[in-house]
Image 1 (cartoon, rainbow, N blue to C red):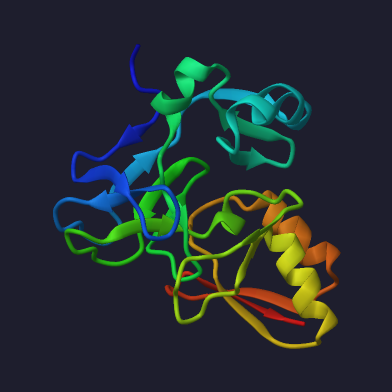
Image 2 (cartoon, helix red, strand yellow; image 1 turned 90 degrees about the vertical axis):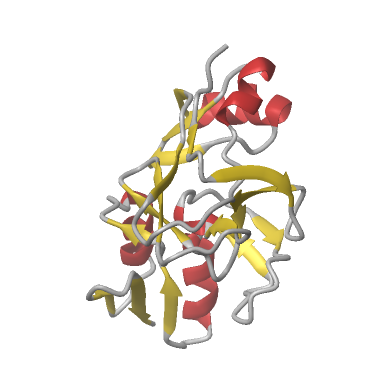
Length: 195
């Protein structure tokens, strides 16, 4: 069976200090280079929760408020996995809904990571083990992070890992949280929320 997802020939999957297996650069990769594209079937949230996640674990990428791309069989699971672990200081961002690109130049041997909050707006909390200096200690959907930060009335600046992505869920979360402003800082890839 053919692979469902694309991984650059400059990458390989191997053991990760962050979690299980991870995606690593085997050669230097330039900023803005495509390193992975998620493939699979388009499924709704109900199908994902009731028929897929219970059998295959977390295998999806959210592409709209109620739509996801995921494998649907055990055989397809490995063929669709990207193995990009979460990091609070990610080096991959999104171009569109399913394409992962480097946000900076990457050296051979580096683990390729993305901020999971930027590819999913579901309700979850997972202990973060990324080890980044700016680690949030908990990985959560962006709506959960905004809600927590808003309650403390602080300014929140996050690496949004977004390069031309239509962030329907993120934008919905920002506006439903009643924030004073939400801006993408020009050419930086950072979102800034005034809480």
